[in-house]
Amino acid sequence: MHNAYFDFAAPGNEPVMSFAPGSPERAALKKQLAAFKSQEMDIPMYIGGKEVRTGNTVDIRPPHEIKHKLGHFHQGTASHVTDAINAALKARQQWADTPWEHRAGIFLKAAELLATKYRAHTNAATMLGQSKNAYQAEIDSACELIDFLRFNVHYLTEIYRQQPVSSPGVHNRLEYRPLEGFVLAVTPFNFSAIGGNLPTSAAMCGNVVVWKPANTQVYHASFFMKVLMEAGLPDGVINLVYADGPTIGDVCFAHPDFAGIHFTGSTGVFQTMWKTIGNNIAKYKTYPRIVGETGGKDFVMVHQSADVDTVVTALARGAFEFQGQKCSAASRAYLPSNIADEIKSKLAATLKTMKMGTTEDFSNFINAVIDERSFDKITSYIDNAKKADGVEIIAGGNYSKTEGYFIEPTVIATNDPTYVTMCEEIFGPVLTVYTYDAAKYEETLELVDRTSTYALTGSIIAQDRYAVELATRKLVNAAGNFYINDKPTGAVVGQQPFGGARASGTNDKAGSQLNLYRWLSARTVKETLVPPADYRYPFLQEA
Ligand SMILES: NC(=O)c1ccc[n+]([C@@H]2O[C@H](COP(=O)([O-])OP(=O)(O)OC[C@H]3O[C@@H](n4cnc5c(N)ncnc54)[C@H](O)[C@@H]3O)[C@@H](O)[C@H]2O)c1
Ligand SMILES: N[C@@H](CCC=O)C(=O)O
Image (cartoon, rainbow, N blue to C red; front, top):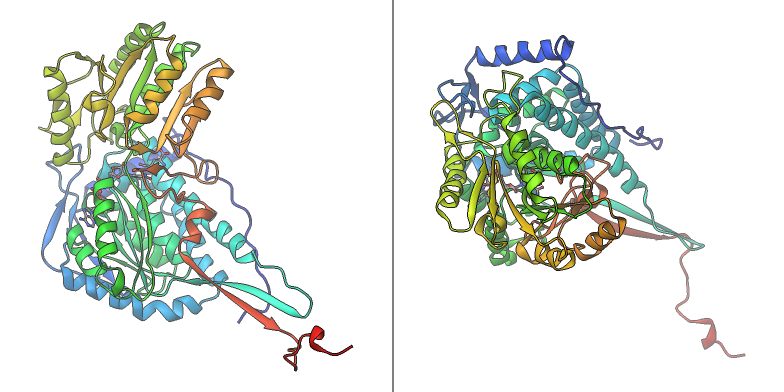
């Protein structure tokens, strides 16, 4: 029972460790990488707090070393998805009734475990399972995930505090109830932090969750589930199942207690989900919340006043960190004719200095892409570019899947601003550049705006403030996260709330109050202190 109001200290961002040679964090991480590589893990699903094994196993291998087996996970079927829904619904009432400070304590403890005891584990699991280098793993599976947990506790506390006014003789209040049913969280391969955030943000609000990660992210997802359990998450609040996407959809979207989907992934999958939910709308007890952050075709617009080295660094990091597998990755750049050649040659020279290989070798900047399907899709764009007219590969272009799924950072130059790689999301280490007439800046901004169906991230690089102002105004709907003189990646929780519009999603801004509101259903309660005892208005009385 509450007998006091509790507060939580406003969080700061978790500091990013350096992993410099000789540092203790580097030694701990190397040790954990070796430990994970020396054992084959048998990874169950977690339904109602119980480990569930089916015997139908799928191998997990590092994308950069496909001959090595890290372990396997147990694939579930439709009946496991139903079990997960039932376990969630069974846990629902007690979890919804649990006071906020007790729910918050679990997620704050999980953040603390990641920041301390399991710092090396969370990074090593991400480095091996998803082929991220130490820095990319640290900003994702340590810092961003810790920040999501701590900042969301802070934001939800602030939401709960927001109350309506009360006129004399009346007490009004808003109760922020969880949704009536279960929430389905479907998460992508590319960010361990997103895998952790989508189920926990909804659960924090008092909801119960069925969580389905991408197969290629199960290695970290199952580790994080164990951290949540160690932090005290009650059985059934989050249920982790590994079933194929369509099976999850068939079972969850047909269930009368389906109350919301928290999705991050590709636009096509999200649109299919939305259609299915629409077709089933009469089946549900409540209108489901549909939240999806999806694909991008993120731009870097360069003005003739730009500093060349700033542009080259923004492109090198923005397009090629984590092999370009960020929804925010720079994948089309517009270069002004006065400095285009200098940018292209400096960029090509910079990319030659990037070493490619395993994540265990800390001198590698570039690692492997996630799996064979992705490799084949990305390399088909490169192969087509090699054959196309008016298109030239000016850096990279080579690839191999013998040891792992390795693709060189590749830059395509085109004289057609509507060439396919200027428009479609490739989700790999491929950047396309188009040179425009520096005198046609405003027309080119219009071209940037209309070229893609997406609107996730984008940058303007310019020294001229009028050029910055014009781009900010003209591209107002072209990106949900807009950067000035920076790369379009690397949003930090609490600093740059993240999400895009148009085909890039519902723009509910992960890691902000806007997102948490989607998992709450407010009830207004009005209490009249001394109720009237007569229906008559004063004016009805005779003078
Ligand atoms: N906007 C953002 O915040 C953001 C962040 C990260 C990734 N992304 C996007 O995610 C994509 C890359 O991730 P991915 O390859 O894991 O995406 P994906 O769409 O292939 O998969 C995402 C999740 O959906 C599941 N899924 C696939 N088909 C399904 C179906 N028919 N029904 C139900 N679930 C299904 C997958 O198993 C996975 O768990 C890119 O398009 C990227 O831009 C967006
Ligand atoms: N939030 C990340 C991108 C997440 C999508 O992949 C960034 O800002 O780079």
